[in-house]
Length: 298
Ligand code: SAM
Image 1: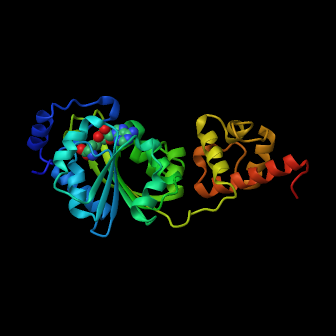
Image 2: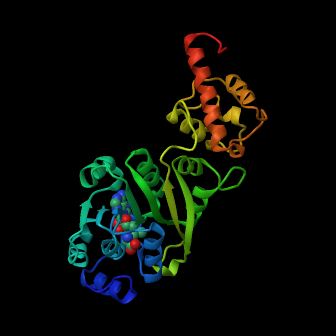
Image 3: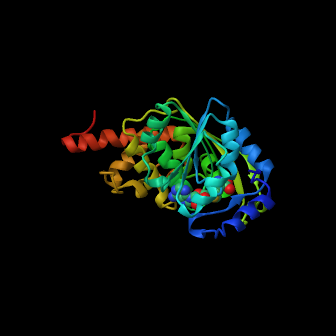
């Protein structure tokens, strides 16, 4: 099977199977061999590796992965691609395609079954309409992930990498940076895809931490605090967090926690670092516990 990373070969396969692109599945297939090599290089895929690919499409990147990795598992939602992948991946015996919605799959179990729970590399040209739930889902599944190297919308890559005090900084930046070190590897223009997306794209690599960079008493509470802080960006932190969903404290009690954190009472969420969010959520945790027990913390 000739390499699909060349536009003529992709067009030939699409015509042979009379494939119709489904916008609702975010189908923009890669047609540039340089970009494909760059992604595989950025992911550092070797014959030791077990790779999870999300959305193989017609198998363009999957072929590259099969050549470089020990084993590849690819998850694809669109069953119309079944005859296509049967042909384009027919020459490889180190690939399995799972026909499922990746958001509904038990990824930790899959990795346990297929790779005896050892760390995997995730490599994908993601469907952009579900980038955030896929990335957060991968981290929250607590499956062992060595790295995630993915093509995403440029604007989303900028948000993943942003630090405090910048316009792109928000809940996604903090979620990603709690689990991994993000690095932008390449910017990719629309003409490298078929059909061309309306937005610019970026390859980003997220290298997972062994241990999170900050410790917190209650991870779920910290993420509730983060979400509530950015839900209403224009509000001060105390206004945004007081009586917010899953935070059982009044605005005044939150105000006290902010004072104990040692930052200005009018601070906004976008000014706080991950360390400060962890510390603030621990103060909120203590105060909630004391309030529930009916006493002031010492
Ligand atoms: N990897 C191919 C490439 O680079 O040419 C295709 C990438 S395309 C941007 C995204 C792929 O993800 C499509 O094949 C699409 O059908 C698939 N996809 C969309 N939603 C999905 C989901 N929920 N679960 C699994 N695959 C999905």
